[in-house]
Length: 193
Image 1 (spheres, helix red, strand yellow):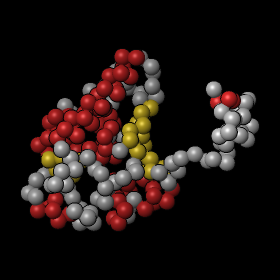
Image 2 (cartoon, helix red, strand yellow):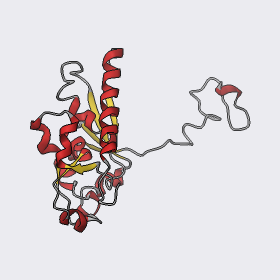
Image 3 (cartoon, one colour):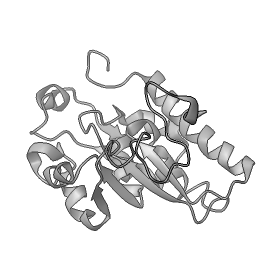
């Protein structure tokens, strides 16, 4: 973020390019993908692109918007939305207003600017929302943890799941996993190759 608390325009261009390149690659490879997991604000535009300009090319692709760090909203001045290439009808879902529970609320509110948030857009457009734990999925329904998005989470609660990030090291231990034909571990990686 820059000193005004917003992301530099270069970060917006990077998010646009990453999102478009991902969809263009999938379209050209013709892989028949079923779902795209969008991680944080940097890939949140994918949710909208699939419902607008890529809807004909990939009509059955579902999206999941990952939510780990609500503090990072991918916020930019509202006049920058035009760089996304999205139709004007999408602008309302991009528009974001700072909420009083946010740490930097005063600075944003006093700035005199209107804002957009790529994360907000992803939360509204995604088919499913995923939090990194069941507890966090419950916490973000409150103003304290929702950081201005709690109303979206409440409205889309049936689409919100808390799935623990990581792996169960006991169940998926390569030294003891019954599903592996050859076991391996730190001291002996021969079975991993």
